[in-house]
Image (cartoon, rainbow, N blue to C red; front, side, top):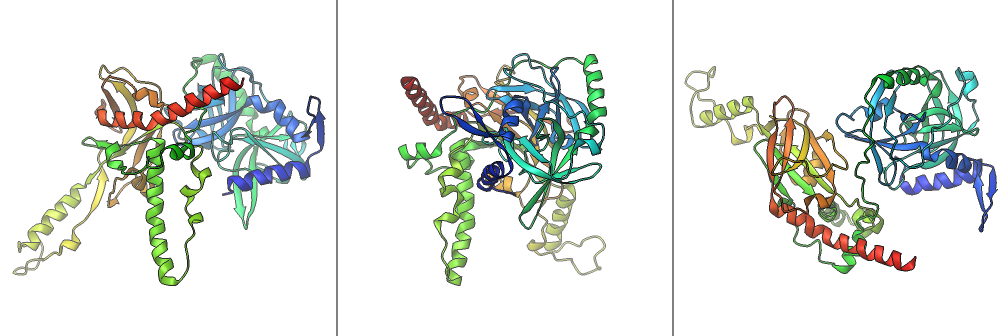
Length: 491
């Protein structure tokens, strides 16, 4: 994966090397490349698509609100599929067409309350021969790596190979670019950026030719005439001002001392809940890295080499200067001992006590060491979805992000929940909220839908955790107020 620093370097160098430049009029004349002109003409129609499983890109194809993206971008979008045109311009989206064979999906949103937005011009080519040529310069636009800091970024490249299903090019494309447009220097969409392959440092991207989407686009336009139009209401967005840990730690160097993730955790019979604020999330990441680096330092001392502070990612200011100012709530299924494991362990106990196991040799008790006890666990109630509600069962706020992702060892480290072994694949709920949603005197609870279970499981949200959230955000809110006041004073 290409790092952000290298990505920006490629962007700048490529733009200068490959593109003809133009001068725009104004008080301070600036040279803008041909690619830059194309970007300016289409950027309002390029969106970030985010779902339960992550984010990708997309672009408008007509004024009715149809948006083209990749099928794999929306694959995990059930229950939470949104498109973002700009700050605080986030909308619900629905899937109209999902063409998995060609990795194409068409979404639909109601753009009634969105500001500037324009459909991108699509190439009128009817076949691959007329669509593009090897050596043609191209522009890729999307939201790579992070859907906030690199939203709607532009890169440039050259078509290197063409086959019937893929346009290969070398414009810098990273995770998150999927579904974004690939444009010719005539300013027309010729492809949908879909994947990247990297060998020996050389990255080649692949785009689905736009000619393959013609049938899907026609189908989508016919379908929406029979569908209920999505809601035009704007949905909550990640706050524009980042949670700048650097500044806040300068004012309170001891802020992260004496923290325990267990103070932010609570549980019910079938689910454990982990709450992360920006400072607590950073603390958990730093703690995890400290544990890893501690082992490296021991190895360094033994083998005679030194470990530099530069190896600690969290000690680099840039690592945590753009934390999202949101509250993350992770709902983790609690693995229970499987029935087979219970039986095996019960038999083991009897055996170790000298009781004969069925089938064992007569007269010789089957002795079992405690080391043979099974520690396998299986999930009894798998997470499906969740709602944050007050004590009168009224929803509290709308999640900024929501979804379910596979439960893995990294999750265990971040949440502080330690499980020995899972025998099946499980999912956890990952939801983010505006911290003001917890600034209430009402009692809160999580209503969790589990797979295969009718009704909802209610999990009370502890008052002490609410207080921790508010205390963690008070310095941030003061920082935002101070920044806003200084901005107004300079106007």
